[in-house]
Length: 151
Image 1 (cartoon, rainbow, N blue to C red):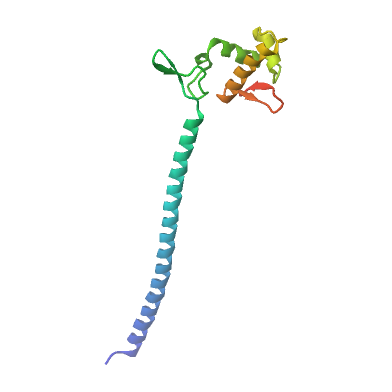
Image 2 (tube, rainbow, N blue to C red):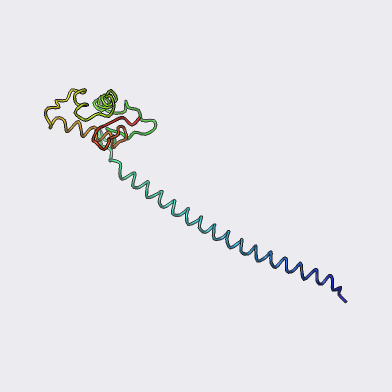
């Protein structure tokens, strides 16, 4: 005959193990749900990263062709790209903006670089160069239309 005390201990231990099994099953389900969510987040991140890379690539102007080689006259400002990579007239424009006692208007830059500012048709190409430098990250344009260096 089996000892009733041992049977009681076995039954109690079985109940403890059943309860522990239920907890572990719940934890396992939570872990699996978390892993599935992480996998989904990873796929979304990869897709968005690819889309952003495509958008950035399409937003950049296509380099021109000179002698059969691709060149970009006004490169984007990036680490490792120095001002001396810019054409000489653009370097002069950046220098003129720096020399200003704060943000400057296109007219002020024109005075420094020698553009006839009394003729609007001669000032507009300069303004276009300033905007191109803004687009490429070399300068910053303030809401009031003045230009400043990014530094």
